[in-house]
Length: 333
Image (cartoon, rainbow, N blue to C red; front, side):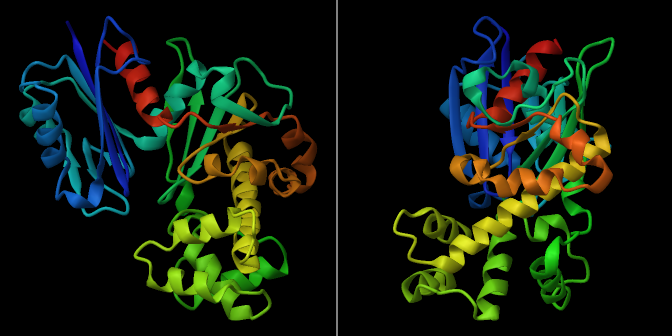
């Protein structure tokens, strides 16, 4: 029985799944999620997982890892995590040579052709081209982007580091936001304002304006939290809406995400569709359906009509990264 090890390695969580070729990429025979920062290396997590799964070194057919960071020469310095991952070291540890290191958004892109209708929410129906390029944008701990191109040998996913391009503000408030952050950072990227690490920047900016009502209790939680992002998001999504400042943060986040998604669509001519995923957007489908997202997506001057024809989806499948890595592993024997 051929076993395939699949990993989705992010700044916050590392998800490992074990598959066998008889059951396919939708049916892992073992899986586990780890807090990435509880370990000093991927190899340490692999040892724990393989021991718990009763798999010995050399028993695997191949391994595929989607990693948050640029893969260069079989080596990755993981973004937002103090790890260096090298393909050669993993091959020795796993006692096999069929090891693939992919950017984490690259693995998500490989999942796109295999998603079912229930795995996504339509944000804009558009007019999809069946053989058109598809793009994916994913705010999680950071901001990832990738795209999938159809070719003679089938779809091929390409990674990018587009989340690190310079933030382009829209409107006076966002211009003030850029000025505010430019006093703290030499380079203000989209990731600085449209990700898990970016949401606290939005909060502190709006707090400095003294224009929005602040919940004292929630502000204390945010100030004392090791990771304030979940506190801000939960407060904004709460039905009681006791923190208008947090609500404004989320509104601005959605607008910036819409603009960034529209930029990506233009760069790669994503006539096959744009797919939004990551750790944050699937948590707030109603906010993603808000007209402000598509308004920012399409606000591109002469290209507005083109963007209105591009389908946009919110991916709700929680294991899409692992699933995409598994699809890649099964299609590359």
